[in-house]
Amino acid sequence: MYVDVAGRCVGVVGTRATAVPCALRTALDRLPEVTRASVRDGVLHLDEHPLVVGRLVDVTVPRLIRSGGPGPIDVASLVGLGDGLTPYGDDVLCGWLAVHRAAGVATPDVDEAVRGLWHRTTLLSATLLDCAMHGEVLPEFAAWVAALGTTAEEERAAALAAVGHTSGRGLLEGATRALADLERVAA
Image (cartoon, rainbow, N blue to C red; front, side, top):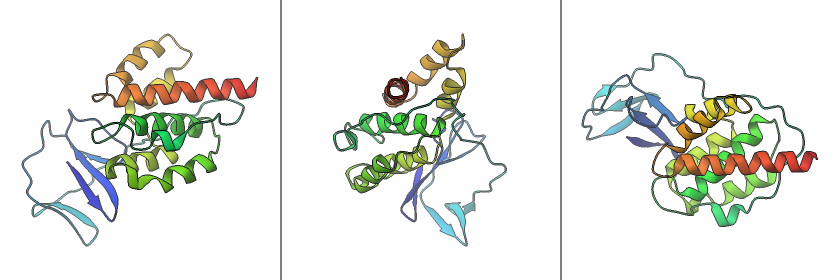
């Protein structure tokens, strides 16, 4: 389930759902039916039950050692491109942004362009774009980045590509595009 909390999307997910970086993860296999979500005194309530946070999970993208600056990306042609809760173009941008954060490469012009176009996409997708700009990613993305250049890279890429209907493939496309751009600019 996704809740609008002051203009930011906050997910509440069970163990079988995609663990988006803006989600509160539960130990439940399946969430119970909820008719109303509200925030009272800074606490998210599902119906009348407060959601208690037990521990924090690190959603930071692993550090990459790469030199060079960002390559070009056409933000206007990607934001909101596709259907679903996270349009494919947004997923591509999330992957591109997250790799730049992992490499410690700032992308202020792209960030500004993305923020200026949030109105063209879903609240969840806009929140995930913001997460990517802060280097916050899915566990499958973090595992793939950590496996780059190792024998586990292909297996981790397949696990990432399997996320959602097309989200994982979009993230992978944006990330590999960013890696190629960073290598080309450094050369």
